[in-house]
Structures are given as C-alpha cells and as structure tokens.
Length: 597
Image (cartoon, rainbow, N blue to C red; front, side):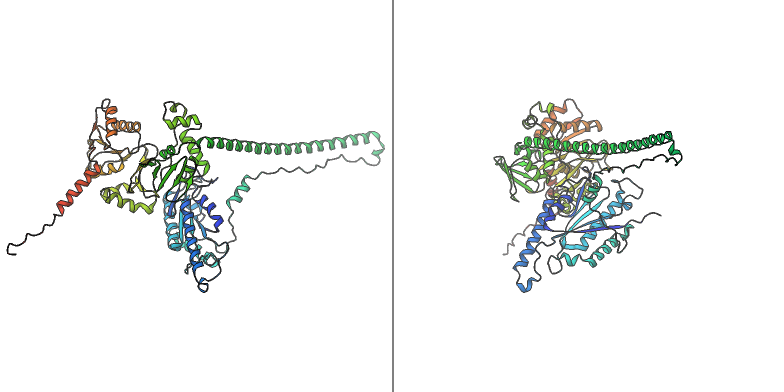
C-alpha cells in the first residue's frame, strides 16, 4: 500500500540573538553543507535579502517598543519581557513521496506538483498571518522543496505575544489549517498527538560525521586440553603431553587476541591520519584564502564597481547601482542611503552582493586574477592578461520578484511607450521579469533554451544597462504570421528590440545586444547571419554601428545597416503614438466672437 503524503509544519521561536543566524541560513549568506550550491532560493513574499529581513524585524520591534514605553502605565499592560520572542519561523513542506511520486532520486521532483504546493503554501501563509507575515522564501536546492516563513507574533492589541498566539491549542489549529490548505493536492494531516520528534540538522551532522572509536576486544579464554585421569597422571609422558598442549592453547589464544588488538590500533591510526589530513587541508585552504584576501583587498574600488555594473557619476567619485548609490574616497566607500561604510574591495563586494567573506574573496580572485600580477594585468587591460588570467566568473542572473512586476510593466508602458500587449507577450514567455530592485530583467538563452545571462535595465530617473551571466543576446522570435523572408534585426538593447517589435509587428527575429562587448556583438551578428538569409543592424548607438560596419560589412555583404542614430526607435515609437493620439483627438478651438458683440 502506497504511503499517503502528509503536510509538514514545524515551528520555532526566535529571540533577537537568533535572528542573524536564521537569516543567514534562510537567505544563504551563511554556508549550508547539505544545500546544492547551484540550486536556487526564491523570495515569494516580503523581504528578499537577509539585510532587508533584519531591518524590517528591527524596525517593527523598535516601533512596538517605543509605543509600549510611551503608553501610560495603566494602558501599558503586562511588563515587557527582558528577552522577548521577536519572530517565529515556520518550515512548510510535505512528505517526500508527494514531490517524488515515481521514486525519483533526492534533489529531483515533479515540477507541476511542486508548483501547486508552493502556491497553496504561500496563499496559506498570507491568509493565516496577514500583516504579521515578514518573509516567505522557497528553497529548492535541497532534497525536498520547502518554504521558510517568518512571522512577528503581534496579537490583536498590537503587543508581541508569542506565548499566546503559539500556545498548544493554537499550534494544533495551525497544523489543521495548513493541512486543510494542502488537502486539494492530496496531502493529509499527520496523526494528532504523535510522539514523533524532529532531529535538528546540527545533531544529524554530528551523528553522521562522528568518529567511531574502536574498542579493545575482550580477552579470549584459551581452550586447554582435557586433564588426564588419576591413573594417567602417574605417567610422566602423559603429563608432559598435557603441559605442551596447554601451553600451545594459551599461546594461540594470546596470538589471536594480539592480532585483534593490532587491528584496533590500525583503525585508530587510520582515523588519526584522516583527522590530521583534514586539518592540514583545512589549514592550507585557510592560508590560501588569507593570501588571496591580502592580494584582492588592495584592488581599486572603481575597478570593482565597474565589474559590478555600476555607472560612474559626473564627479568621478559617485557610483550608481540598482537601488544603491556609493561614494568613494581614498580607498573607502560609503553607501549614501543606508550609511554603510567599508575600507576595501572585499567589504564592497560583501555589501553590494549580500555574500559572506569567503564568497567575496573567491569572486574577486576569479574576476581579477589570483595573483597581484594577474590582477594588475586585468585592471590595466594589458595584452598579457589573456595569458595569465582565467576567464572571469560572471555574477548570477537576478532572481524574479513578483512584487515589482506590475510596477515594471507600468513603467515600460508609460515611460518607454511600449504597448502592453508586447510586454505581456514577453512576460508570458518567461523572457522578461522584475528583480528585487524593480529593474527589468531580459533573459538571454542559449540554443537549448537555457537561461545563461540577462540584460538588466534600471527604470529609475537615471536608467542604467548592465549584464549578468554570459554575454548572450536577448532574442525576440518572429510572429507566427511573419514571412520567413524578412531579415533578422540586431538592436542596441532589449527595450529598443521591444520598440522595433511594436513598430514592425511582422518583422523577423530581433537580437538585442545591450551591455555586450564589441567582440561579443560581432560573434552574435556572425551567428545570426549564418541562421538567416539577411541580417540588418538596427543599431541606435553611433559608435557601435560604425565599429560593426568596419568589421562586418566587408566580409559579410549580406549584413546591412539601418541605424537611425537620431532619433532612436523609442523616439520614433513615441512620435507615431503622439501622431495617432493627435489624429484621434482633434484639438479644441475656441469659437470666434460674434461681430454683434
């Protein structure tokens, strides 16, 4: 009989001292041994980073504390606890057999079933906890998908009261409500009053990695020969044979016992050698990390900011990143919105990308080179950099944020003039989404349809275009009704590509190369010319159009240039829209005054 999947809801209370550790585990800013480094975590509600989560909880707690202390003594209520429970963490998941109905191996599961559970769990958390809900994050890099839910236990009167909201009776109701939310998926409730207990991950690791201490074998009792009878004892030869047999039996038992003991000593020696080897490897890794950190710490901050995609301000010391603004001075930096400060390149990467110390050092080492000579070669762009430096490791593609999707679509439609139908078409295909900063992320895929990079557009007052992942093109496939003889178009960036699609609904393939280096653009155009009969460069950047014309037109006569340069395709789209609006709505004219008046 197949086992029925069960709804799993585990609750733990967090004091202020526990918040940083919980945030590090939840948002993966701290190392997690059992998590796949290549897996993904997806914020589904509320805070999307560890810093934002800690700031939100701290702000709500400080506001509650200020209100309670400012209230009159008669209205204040119960005395404030010295170390109250400020947050409650819930782990929501289901039995592995729900996600792996066909006995898939750990780490693999049925995607539609996991998606249905994810939506049900998120809806349950929002409905059940309401305004107390701080964050919901989906983890998909372990053996079974699960959600971490963080709730601040404010009761209806506005007081922190985890003891009342999460007592025994309310915990039973919570388990019932979560099981009821998962019931349409075929997930049932566990046994009421079960004595089963959860084993902490730390205890599991200690039991798994504990060294088994070999025990000394018990002493073996020798098998002595049978004592001769009374009459046979009078014979000296019989007693001599008996003595020799007893001696041999004792010697054999002692030798066997000694052999077992030698095996125990060998096992102890092997375990000790393994510990020594692990300690040496750990010491070497730490020494290498320290040496690498000493080298990359001195990298110039402007060089690091450029690699991170920051745009330099007119004063030369101000750098703009999505949602952040940095000021550099004499090897130090300061984030103007939060006031955070740092002294070197490692601190800058830690703050910009929300990673730990080791991850920041490794990224700087791969990006700028492991030695000072390689770092200098990469920083100054010398020719010998290609000989010494390995290919830099790109930063990961931003994760989608459903909270900013509507605002992003509204900005593209109202500010850039792109028709909503074109935007919805690209969003439905999964090639356009919003990140945690509200920027527009255009997914760049390889020939197999796998996302390998992204072209990111900030949509604030000073728009910025930067790359994440591999330098691939963002591709708009043609409409089903478009003739196959139409040429492929190469646009300057993804927004220009959407404008071209709006201007020419029946155009062919459109390739966007925003943020790609010139050598990468040449490769993309060459590949497009091999796939299509004709390729037209609809480039709105004069420098890039001239460089591509000099390097491509002669060897590839089938490549043409249709560069408006002034105005851009976005301006042309706006002009057509204004003309259409003016034609649809004629201007009002005041009637001329009557001559009789």
